[in-house]
Image (tube, rainbow, N blue to C red):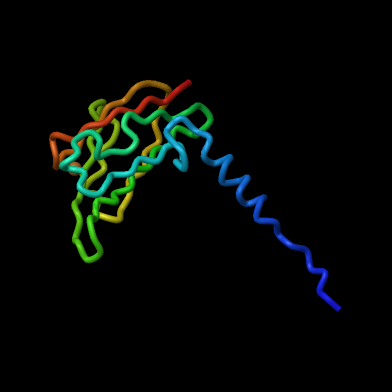
Length: 128
Ligand SMILES: [Cu+2]
């Protein structure tokens, strides 16, 4: 006799993924996540993705920068170091594969730059 164990329907998992995509920074993005892209230095401000970043109300004002500046397997990658123009944070050196998290104090527009690469700067708007 066949088993009557309950089944998990894949469509429910898909619905969750679609709901997670509903933000202004592009499909598949977690609000508040910034990726430091491979070869970021050659891309200037576009090395931070997305840039500018909008953190919607209700997302806790938390921003996570993830350093994914590793071009190929076995590549040692490039460290980045984030400084707030408003003197709110100093990330220290973020190794490739590492991350830095900061919680903004309130709504506003904030600016940051990379201490290691002066051509890399970004803007974050935290909404009310
Ligand atoms: Cu940098």
